[in-house]
Image 1 (tube, rainbow, N blue to C red):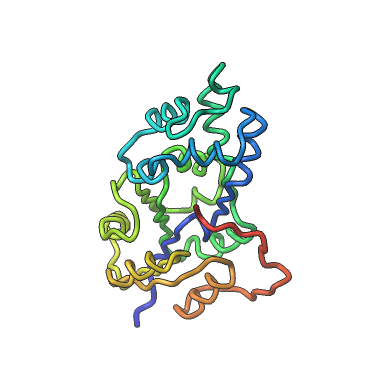
Image 2: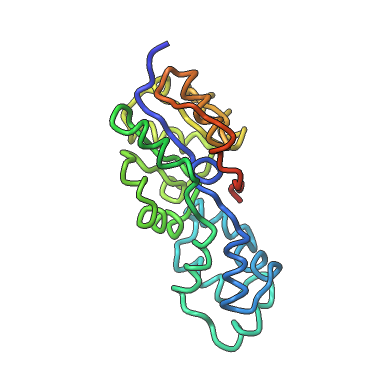
Length: 227
């Protein structure tokens, strides 16, 4: 088997924690809303899915939140809508890099092409690109909202392969969702289910790629699955 030329990473649940509880706490502080109101307003009528698929843009997403579609908004929202900047701050508060992310990316950067393949929206993507330094080390960033589809749709895998300009069997892919891993394998990509540092390092080792010793003492125990 040929040595891989590129490594492709999913974001949420692999390199980035997605913890809605952090956003809910900020939602509560800024609006007086509770968990139920956050879920109903931010995730009503497949809102997040449609945002990820690119069927609505950022303005439409924020407008839907401000009007409280799907449920009555908190009393503070009905009296005086909060600024869009605050809504964006609530929406992005759930994201943070995992403790091992920089170490793994630094390990691979320079010897392999690195790519991101993520089901995400433009607000989350922009925030991570601006706030997370490791993004600068990725040659390719393929986002679902730009492709107009989400994994495991073949269009997602085709898009990242086209941007990389590398054959599928020369790429390794890590994702935390089994259906996305299967979708990649069906496209000829060497894919692994990975939801933590140990999983990623195990996949890299199997492919003969750079790795390092892993121990439970340094493992990031507070991991949150992508929502």
